[in-house]
Amino acid sequence: MADAFLHLPVEDRREALGVAADRSGRPAHLLEKDVWVVWALATLGSCPASRVQRCSVIDGPIAH
Image (cartoon, rainbow, N blue to C red):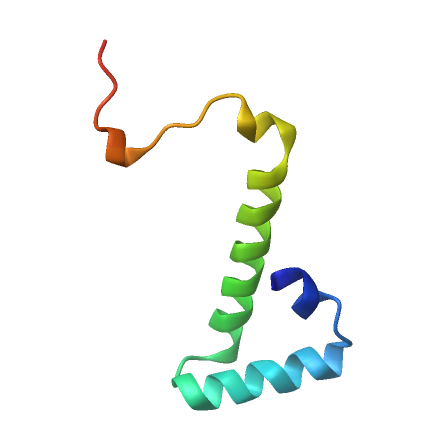
């Protein structure tokens, strides 16, 4: 979803952020930051290095 948003023309992105800000009550700049965070995490999660080792908080602490 972040990729599709980031490929929109600047004016369309600005309009979409304005609508989302009005509906959510959150500032547009924070919503835009959220888009970039989602994009960055998706990009990092899809790179080959991310498949080498995954650690989960659900698994509990790492034993030494």
